[in-house]
Length: 111
Image (tube, rainbow, N blue to C red; front, top):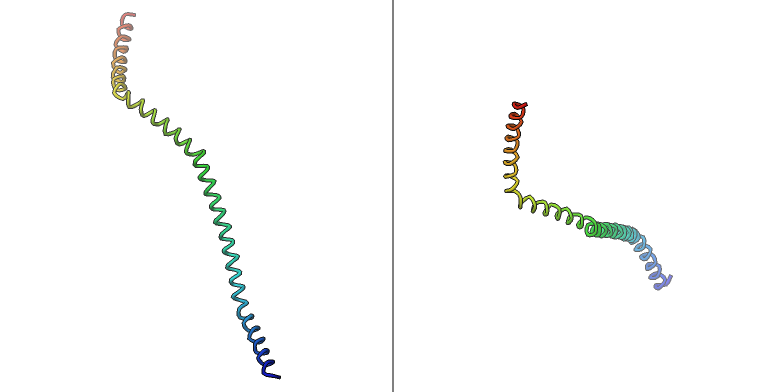
């Protein structure tokens, strides 16, 4: 064998050795790429879900909450405006009960 042939044979042996040593690394790298792609898909699905939730919140939940808030605010306003009158009404009702009871007793005594 000539020197060139020996060098070519050594080069081929080294190429085969490198290929065999690099193949597991290539396989691992491909596995990592596949996992990254799967994670990207999952992240996109989560982003889509979040987007749908935001739309639902904006279009369904928030208008309903605003309606509920408005209802409670209006009710609170009415009660606040009449809170002093409600106490007076209870006192009047108590007085009416007392007068009706007295009148009932007097009517029974007449009959």
